[in-house]
Amino acid sequence: MMRILVTGGSGFIGRNLAEQFASIYEVLAPSSAELDLLHERDVREYLTAHRFDVVVHTATTRSNRRLAAPPDLLDRNCRMFFNLARNEGRFGKMIHFGSGAEYDRTDLPPRVREDYFDTRVPGDAYGFSKYICAKYIERSEHILDLRLFGVFGPYEDYTVRFVSNACCRVLKGLPIVLRQDVMFDYLYVKDLPKITRWFMENDARHKAYNVCTGRRVALTELARMVAEVSGCNPSVSVMHGGMGAEYTADNSRLLAELGEYRFQDARSSIAELYGWYAADFSQVDSTALQFDSV
Image (cartoon, rainbow, N blue to C red; front, top):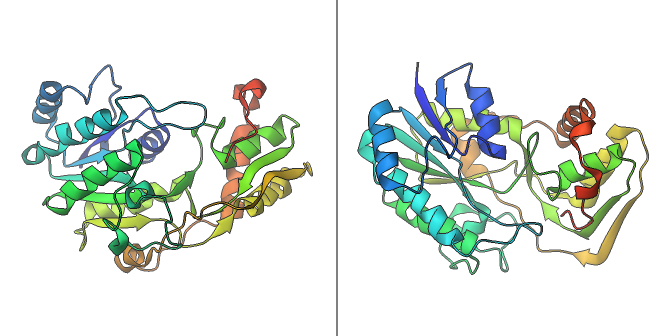
């Protein structure tokens, strides 16, 4: 049985991966108290002691409208990555979860392809940290970069993440409100373990892949899906007119590896997520739900 390290195991992506992998692999997903990725010696000793077949690196520091970026965001993200990457000889393979932000979201073309990378240097600290890691991965032998765009599902931050925010607002009897409509490419988080597993168990032909559905969808359309599956007929409004900057990607390189992969459709994914919140909506704090949840 393969031994897997999942970093960021208490976060949205890491928690979902660790749960799904638990029945397949021997999974360790230590908390930051158990393994501080910012400490070089601790990381080296941990990797030496466990000799993982695969390191799945999801841990990251980022910001949103509720949480300002810490001044050391760039340092933290790079340090966590390099404390792992420089120990390549102590594990078999590393899967690094990057971001579409590596391309720089300023004037990002629709359905961006992987060869667009390095056309621009991201201007924000988060995107720049992911860009630095991606540049290193280009020269590495055993590290892959899986670039995420929109991902939604259980355990995400419902106060600011759109799909969960919309589900929770409806459950609390509130209207769905968007700051601005935007075209996204949203992947249901339960597709991610299947995709990640392929790269863990197979040899990839490239160093970086856009991990997305390849389907463009407007936030207003997703809001209508939430309204439909809820059966509550909530109102849906947009605070600012026009369309925001599109955030979509081409996934032909990914599909060339996976073959006939079928992504879970958006509506059934939203219905499943809505049911997950409905099963225990006492966990949702009405006062934490924000209007600018895009």
